[in-house]
Amino acid sequence: MLGVNKERGVLEIGCGYGAALDYFKKQNFKKIVGFEPSLHRAEAAATYFEADVINNVEKASGPFGLIFSHHVIEHVYDTDRFIKTAAPLQEEGDFLILALPNVAGEHAGYTIFYLPHLHAFSKQAVETLLNK
Image (tube, rainbow, N blue to C red; front, side):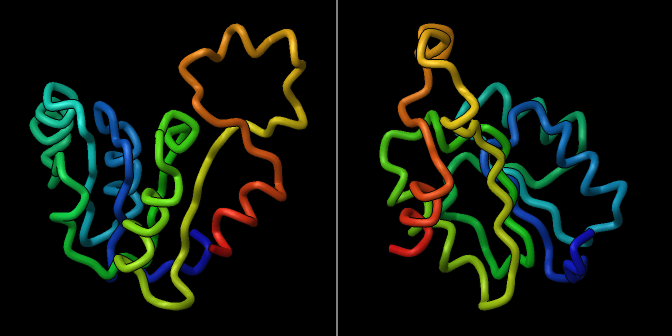
């Protein structure tokens, strides 16, 4: 997977019930950590997938060769803080994978269906966020 050193570990931000943690486990990552602010989801993920799940990302002990977050950042109030919290947990050359909706592909009329989204991202918006 992308040449990620599986000995260095993976952190999933917003791990939910842990399905991706299970995937990383099956891919033989040695250190798998999930962050989930919802206590009941964090407990379910930790129990069902026998994973290290935390509910305070500041408790994460890096570095992580991969930080993964699937459709989380568009729901986060302070996106700058999200990136500034994740960045020190990695070293130069590590991987950050953010899955998020592309505003260029969304029809303006459909935004009513995405009211929980606090942000809409374009390619330029993501580049600006990451370059801060």
